[in-house]
Image 1 (cartoon, rainbow, N blue to C red):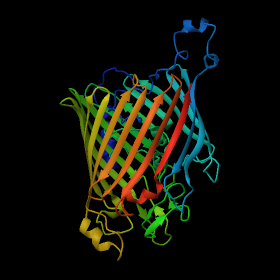
Image 2: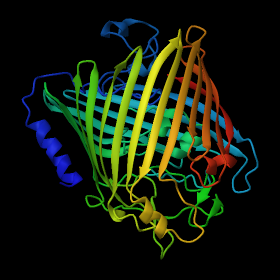
Image 3: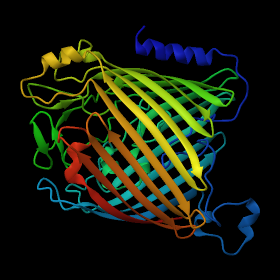
Image 4: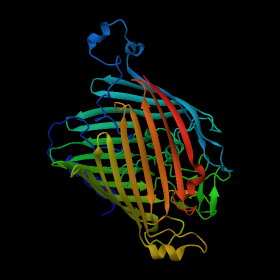
Length: 469
């Protein structure tokens, strides 16, 4: 049975169950810090004092201006600046220099909710400020434009541009095949911008036995991947580090309803544990192949089957997640221009080890399929990937000063690649509206062709200030 057939089977299984009325948007696995959403898509996040309340509050004389609008409005303004710690002749000295205004408007109708979220952005490092909603570049980025409604008591529908996420990893993704913005992640934008929007239809079906999420994306949504314009990287086609001097050109699947994507999740609680099955049918989200004739990067077809389990372990929370990546264009592993199939595994554990001090640990494995065929097919002199790539992560989070000051240190370390990535951050909540933060993106590696080692010239520190309303 192919993956798309399995996805349809998951849909029919979810719809065919005996259902019981329940709350909208049943609980999903807890997300990594900074990537979370409200507990449900229809539940309203807590607002600063003065922006919420009962209808009787409208009689006060100091109502905020937003309360007079026929829709709910909130947002923030922020400014960020950062600099590289070393000299990279392929890039500018500044790593980030921008200011943005985000506005989020919500309008509640009878039985439906309309939500619009957009960022008005001035990026001093952007050569072309024309708007590109696919890449998020330019003076405006549309983060969300969605309509949410419930055709029945056990079914929710969300249609339009939206941020999607699932899985159990902390900044490590296996079955979350929704687009990521790796450029934002590595240059010092807020971690919420690691998640890029999808233009999709999401249908959620709930029952007393199992819940189903089904996501259909009519046209492929790629990652906002590293192409050399903001970050230098190891260009395998040229066998060296490249940046603005050799921006990656791609052949991207772009035919609506032909180059589409399907993703599905079946999940339920077993006592205190949540178990989930996943399926995906689409394409590699970042370039994972090349056209030998044109030299352009490609997004080969990809199918993924996976599972996860998350729940209490001792005094903390543990999780396990796995996925099989079926690279359909190179199942034999003998095409050096297409990434091989892979088995991916994640083990995680998180615990509060002292008052306001939390430790999270993860082990991640990528095991390449058909490794010997891959080695035989490599051109002479090309760098050889390891059959097994191991990555260890550690997150330390310490809250002080009445939990208004947050110290965070996230470390990725690969003993197989002998490289590492360090993300220090400190953030202070000055009051209900104003916050400031400082952090860095620090890369280390013995070889320039490894994943983290290739970014050593991009080491940077940044500062940010945000005012929310």
